[in-house]
Image (cartoon, rainbow, N blue to C red):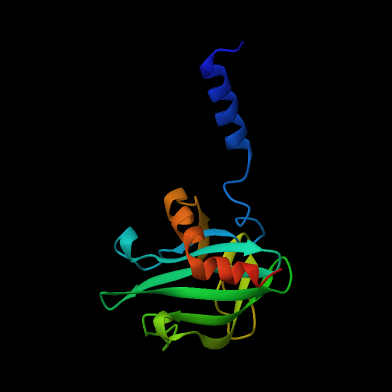
Length: 159
């Protein structure tokens, strides 16, 4: 018979070796933030993305003129480094004019990975302008996001 703590240690070790979540897979999955020009970490722009196959679902947030804006995003991966955002909703601002309670706004905007960073806009010449750096995924935020019914529906559409 093994001591009780041996089983616990083995479980903890295997839990550390497994990915945090099956949805946090794919090149776009994870937490991304851009803090360029901000005075405080609270003012950073962020994406928290989960990916199943070519389907990317998640949240976005940014601060402008002292106001916080946040919402949801749906994208379709075209390759390992290119995706197209197709739907967005949230607090009306520069990203959307559609509240999530009323539905989705259709969009056709890029997401791209260049030099390990995430881009949500193309440069004037079509080049990749990436300013979001990958940061550790806050597990409590990820768990809360994955529990959201809309996210489950979004990821199920990938099957």
